[in-house]
Length: 291
Image 1 (cartoon, rainbow, N blue to C red):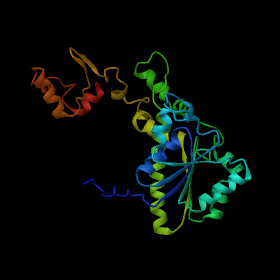
Image 2: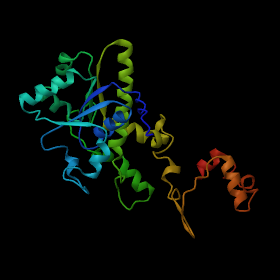
Image 3: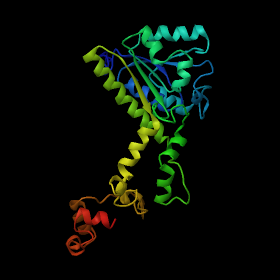
Image 4: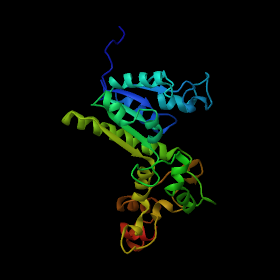
């Protein structure tokens, strides 16, 4: 007999999301929300999300990154610059718990889909704006993409400190995906708050601030103190020796970190007393100094 037991509903089952995001940051966030059980309706312009057209692809308009970021969603095409398209979007928002966008807030306001406009139709709406920069700062209106935010938050400098011959970006959409994860927890926290208060809210998730915290949490180092105790950068992460090691039959990823690891390592290489004999390795603090 075939198994007819329905799959268990996710924790966000029953949550309805109107998704006005495109490219990677927002779609990555809403895909996670869909995987948690939310009903996500992706609203695209008539020409479609830009990433539809980035190959490889088996079928036109179904590029590989687009598929990875948008599985599990429903889709609708509307021209939001046309009054009828805007009105259709507002009608959809009336029945949703959440509207999320990575259109610049200024452009979203010109479209008539800012928080105040949507709240007038649905007072319980949670309105999430993923943008480049905090909206209270001098860069509020600036556009942003992953490469630009990586540059603004020092990723190319870190890559060069690690050994790249010149500044370079991390070869992944790091800023988009880190900020997308911030959007996910902001949404789940807002849904919880609404359950307790009955009120929706406007949320801003800025890429620059999200990535600045992500980078500086590791690399503020001596600059964390006033006066400073040294320059920026966490030496262990920037060491050129922090890499896979070549062996006779392939590459080996190794991390010898705490005292137990080091004792095991010295024993494995026939130097059981090495940890006690060399003060550079004797304690975790000493190893950090002599990384």
